[in-house]
Length: 283
View 1 (cartoon, rainbow, N blue to C red):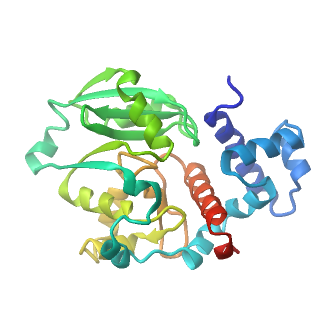
View 2: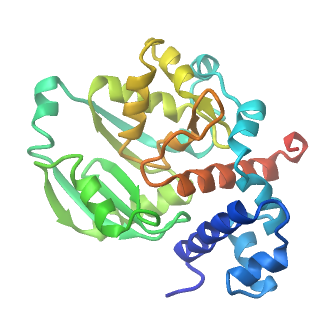
């Protein structure tokens, strides 16, 4: 294994997250590094490479009540976001988006006639299964918590009647662009209601969060919170369409299709980077 890979960094982060949860705030940097089987210097270097801050600072972002603090400090009202569009929303406003809101009949055909290319790629949150049509990336899933087999089967199950072709080379340039914050094409395939929810997710700026009920209100379906939650859970392009930024009104993380540790790590990673850009706004 290449110990400098993004996936290796995340595997260390994920293990550290579990240790932090189990031990509480009294866990020292030395103890944490020891539990990871790494020297303090190596452990600190991995953290700094991955997120740009020290492990001690990062621990503050990984605590269990971080979601509540995000809602207090970084809550985005989507009605306002809809007025301003995607400008200022970070990397997502640079994505080229192709929407394909299917009719009920097309949805029932479950991808029949689609050719979907796929491959495994390294990411900052572990191995990622990426799928795409000739129009852009249509799916991203993460296997760090659930395993590669289940992640692959899950993604194929989104469009069970499509033709799947293993061809990472077809996707490599798009993946490199997307994972490095550059312009990349996305091909969103879903029912009209799902497309509305996923479009709302795109309007949540990096480093900020909103609630399921806010999303429901922003798309004009205030009482459809449960349906919104289902559509969020079926978001096919994780990370780039940021379903991890949607929280329960209570401040709870809610669910995450690829595992709550991945969601918490994504939120912490984005919040830490936002604080690096705007240090005066951090606590």
